[in-house]
Length: 308
View 1 (cartoon, rainbow, N blue to C red):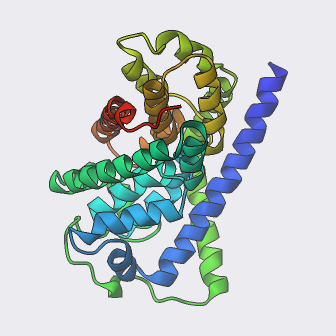
View 2 (view 1 turned 90 degrees about the vertical axis):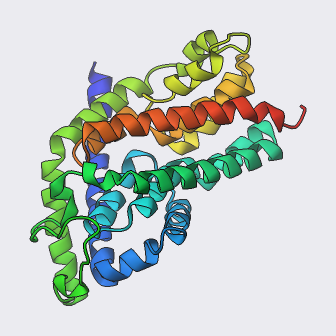
């Protein structure tokens, strides 16, 4: 129990610092770029916006929950929905470290399939998110920066003149730090829950359970692998060694493929933090869509896997 408590305190303190630093950095960066320019750079027209969001996600590979500060800045700047969705999906799962790890484990063609399939799936999902106007499921308090008046409804014409004039770096950094502290205080309870869940899950041995439920001869192996990846709290760098252990335990390529997609894209800590930003319907829909993407990709991957 003492060990778990120290692990919890260490993880919580590190999480608070990291979340605060990321929040402050994104606030300063957003202020320096300007909301209108950020919408233009990351967003754009319906065709280019999801592509830009996906590229932005690949260039900023965070674990699933640490995308939240960036997501908050994109939401408050009213970046196009398809770009935000593409960024949020691509950042954890198209991490170059994870792609390289998959290639190392299963071969070049599997890594290529992983990248191409997820790129296409993310772009399609981002287009659908915009067509369904999922921005209406974002909580109102997220649609304006902390300490400012609320912006007009999503889709309205927002002028850059609504942004407060840029001062100097020192003043902006001081204000960003103040806002980051306010955000951390507001999210303190969810972050504490995130860390408690993370400590409990990190001590589990998912490879044994997955090997039992998702053995290559089980008809439900792939769906089981996809679902078991959802609650885990693992850094992306840990997924490749875990995939190796699963393969050595006799788990097939398909279940491991599905497991790695959901484990990289979703986690209970991330879903807890998302509950502070968006409505429950959107969180449930996100989980279902990612599990479906993982299952479809896993069913198709044996068709292109190079023989070992």
